[in-house]
Amino acid sequence: MLLIKNGTVKTMAGPDIENGQVLIDGGKIVAVGENVNAPADACVIDAAGCLVAPGFVEAHCHIGLDEEAIGFEGDDYNEMTDPVTPQMRGIDGLNPMDEALFDAYSHGVTTAVTGPGSANVVGGTFLAVKLCGKRVDNMIVKDPVAMKIAFGENPKRCYGANKKMPMTRMGTAALLRELLVKAENYREEMDAYEKDPKNNKKPTYDCKLHAMLPVMRKEIPLKSHAHRADDIFTSLRIAKEFGLDITLDHCTEGHLIADELAAEGKPCLVGPTFGAKSKFELKNKCWDTPKTMVEHGLKTAIITDAPVIPLKYLPLCAGLAINAGLAEEEAWKAITINPAEIAGIADRVGSLEVGKDADVVVYQGNPLKDLQYTTKYTVIDGEVVYKAE
Image 1 (cartoon, helix red, strand yellow):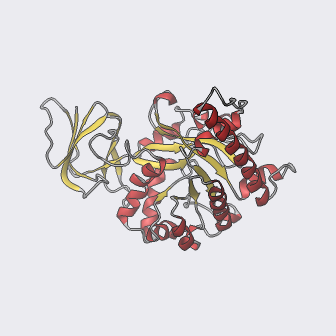
Image 2: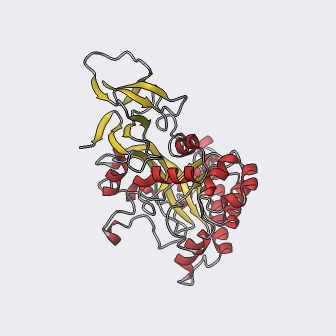
Image 3: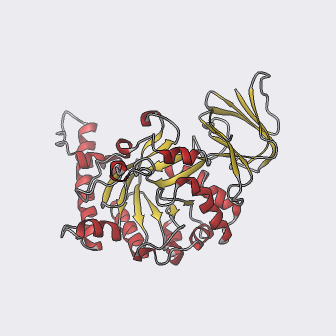
């Protein structure tokens, strides 16, 4: 057993516990409180003067698929040979040895939702993984989490330059609708066959349409890359047409249409906000967006889109949102429990509660408000994977 004691415990499931304790056994949290019943032989981390918090959760990035420092050889997140590739699986491109993963968990980010990029209209599936390990199969929290789709400049740029559809936003929407119509027909045939195989013919296998079954059955949402307001609305329009679940990823102009988004009630994954306005559809990018989304009652996560912003700077992004007016507690939620709930993994991560995975970080200082903070310990699945020298 491992006992973390004497720190301020930020559970994200209730009030902070001054001079609290967290008891860990078998990779799970077994007790949290002012005083827990720990055995005498438990290993102890004395967190006196420190903050004890759940590991941060990143809701949208490409870590491990777009690797650090090696260029083309580590560029495995965009299959730019076909604008519609739902059969791509993020798990097959993720390299756990990418140094960015260590950089992330040594700064307190313990779980990431990662997957294909935004070159394609339909890019493939994202998965949620713990960020420490040698084999991705052993790091999975949930796979798949969502199906990536993309609107706006990126698909147009990647394919329009070759005089290939989509050259326009209309083309992007048309390709997506074409796939969804075929996928819905395939789902109906597959459902009928599985319900009554004697009287219904099994549809001819199609790898693209088969990959779409979890989406059409509402087992996972569409994960919509959309920066500009019109692209956000197009993604919502198409999701409604087919009765599908969707998350709004990037949502750069969300603050301009917050009243409309509030009526829709879909989760907003805001970012990457730090850095330059590198293309036209980012011209309205600002740190006001998370605050505005939260004030309109929308479940909001702050994202890095790593490696656009290195994942280790996720708490910095939350801190900059605080500086723009977002309440500190809401900023904590935006990088812990909110992304966990959005990704459907809140039963395991995002807060310090009995029964959840023992992903716990001990900080000297507040990582959202103190640039001089230090990560003293990172614990993932009950194992100390990082200790400051």
